[in-house]
Image (tube, rainbow, N blue to C red; front, side, top):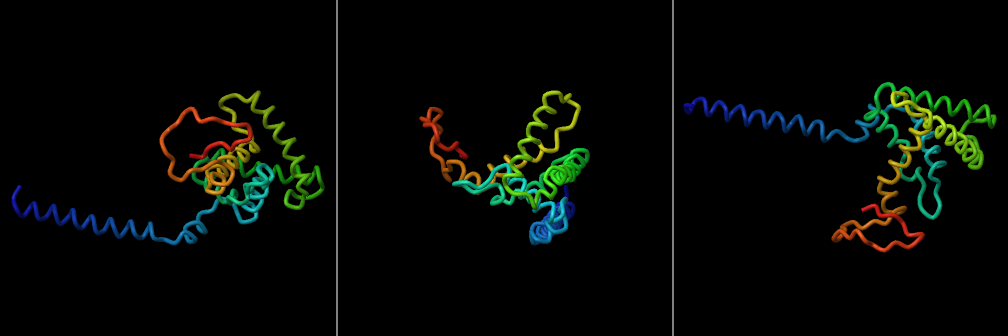
Amino acid sequence: MDRREAITKVGWLLGGTIVGANLFLDIACTPAAEKSAAKTFFNADQIALLDEMGETILPATSTPGAKASKIGEFMDIMVRDCYTKADQKIFKDGLVKLEDECKKEHGKSFMDSSAAERTAFFIKKDAEQKEYMKTKKPEDPSHHFRMIKELTLLGFFTSEVGATKALRYVSIPGKYDGNVPYKKGDKAWAT
């Protein structure tokens, strides 16, 4: 390699680094509100509905409920980014189906139902999905209520609120001890 070729390659390398850095900064420095506003799968009403459904599954007690972890926003991201088109359709159609069934059962929407009505409704839905999962073939899709329940549990217990308030959490854990004594009623470990 001669000097002219080496200088050309270094120039390309440095130019690519500068262009690459500018491109990276344009993508990385876009405000989160701009990114999320343009890329939501559910509308604001559906996200509020998912918040309420999550809160019914994991209600606030002595610890915060699923709504405190913004579970609707979490589900929006997970369904949009991680689910196949077929599963996205099942999830979205399932929301509509749950609303319709709630209106038939209680004469009002899920959002307008009382906490006791929501809980009773979800107990029936949970029994329905368990029965479906027993007879489900591997190629069959998951039940829409099971998807909501799984995302609620995943989103809550991996959120800051769930990990620090509902579980035992040590920000900088010490050594591994596989034989920690457990007393009935102790919280599970998040770390």
